[in-house]
Image (cartoon, rainbow, N blue to C red):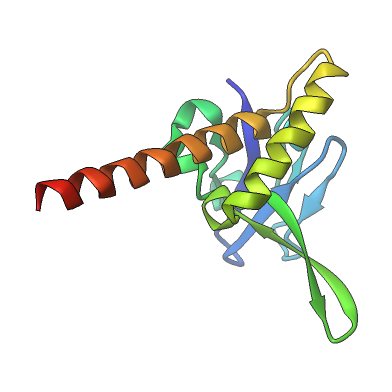
Length: 143
């Protein structure tokens, strides 16, 4: 299965813990010390009480309805003359950005043995949008 969002939830402090890159160990900071590691390469989880950890990863195999809403794409947000990074889902990205990102990933795919799982997410989002537009046109004709 192809992991696209390495996410767990600490029930003790009600925090989502997301590891975005390999060797990116991230913790919630509460006394349960819930941690996620591995990004999209592997999923390693630790906590003092594992019963207080809910596993909420997102896989490509979960289907477009689930992964199109996973906040996996980093965007720059200029805030008071300081750049902050926020994460957004494919569903929130403008179509023009999706098309540019697909071109980027296509170039990377040609230079790598392993294509990015994000390429699949973006391609499926574009297909989803085309299908919605087609359905709107059909419904307009029927009415």
